Amino acid sequence: MPVYALGDRVPQIHESAYIHPEATIIGSAIIGPRASVWPHAVIRADDNIIRIGEASSIQDGAVLHCTIAHETVVGNFVTVGHLAHLEGCTVLDHALVGTGSVILHHAVIGEHALVGAAAMVPGNVEVPRCAMALGVPAKIRENAVPEGHSTMNVETYVERGRLFAAEMRRID
Image (cartoon, rainbow, N blue to C red; front, side, top):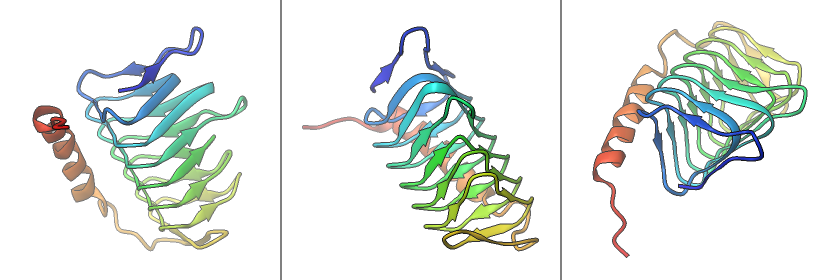
């Protein structure tokens, strides 16, 4: 797997995390226990820190970046869908970030919230706990998501990470 230091910025990856061999991790990335990073995801922590919490999944093709002013923080038990882009934002525990969505500088996605597929959450926007953010720019529907809505997805990706670590092999 391509994991790169950038000067004195060195990734810290928990031993129980699963990083697919075709994911790229650069710089000050901190990846927690049982987290997973899938094919072609890019975590580029060159200007600041990117934190990924316990049992969170960064799915195929997602891009996480940060800014000089803002870390990018993904809490615990978070699903970041395929092709999502997170930059200088915070996604709190148990949230789900849908496929192809974009979350920008200083936005905060609350616990158990859901950002819909292809939604764009502009900078400085807060999506409250258990709310849904849909559209471009995202419109927020409060109290639209039950707590625990993504628990099965989180558990599936933790198990999938274990499976891939144990059984995936290249055959070409």
